[in-house]
Length: 378
Figure (tube, helix red, strand yellow):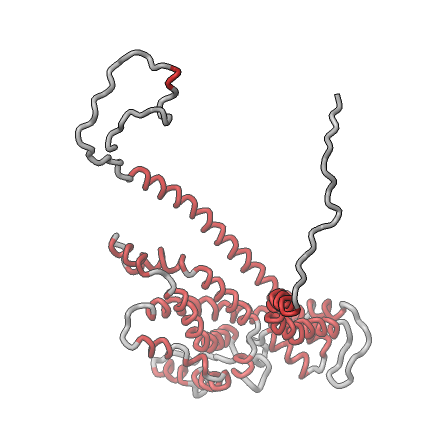
């Protein structure tokens, strides 16, 4: 059987939207466009000073480009092939990695220790906190002059002290490892205080009641540092590691000023990749290969950045996995140690109802509004 319903006809005209005034339209446009206008200067500057030089450098690397003659013939990826077969490029990459390891690892360890000391209740702590930043504001030229005199082979202070103890002189500029140690010392002296202040800011954001609770439970200073401080500042530590890695791979000023007469030593024993790039561009006037070295260095930095990102994600995932376990354990502990609920004394309890005849079904279920039996406390 079919039933036909007589429905009222739908209204053909949609409800008219309220007409906005010019001021209201201006307010709507302001709400939508203002955030993009606020962040636009950063992206415009980044496109001008970041993306455009990057793309133009890759364009130059595809040509036989001379410093004075300008653009030459198109060579494609031949510059990349020749640079990857150049032993000086691999020598510069080895020197960069060696100086990077000698500078970054001790630098982060000492910076963390200094930040932990400055995080204590010291007298004149503002003075001490500002003092660690002094090496950062000294110009790299002054730093290079000071340490070049300290590590001088003939009249350097360190060699004179070693000779006074009967120890042979160290060839700081002619041997590979001593020259790397000398340059890494310059880098560490300049950047340790800067990283220490960043880590100190992260340490001060850790709630103090956690330290107080740990101290009450008997945790010592080192226990609190390794169990509370380091896990709490892990994101800042990752940031410092990544920035130190990028800066270490781009090191140029310290090795350039350590021996200004050469570009990385007489045997290229401390020539870094950026220093080799500078030599290729301005000593050999080969802009095509210099641009190729710049792009290879860019790819290496991106590779290190990805490795750091994966490591940081791994650490964060490990922390998340431990979190729920701790939460479940704490929930179990809370459940097992939760005090039993004790009802307050309510005076003499009413006597238990005596067994009587079965309730009349017509009276309704118990607990319904029809149940008018008085309860305890009412």
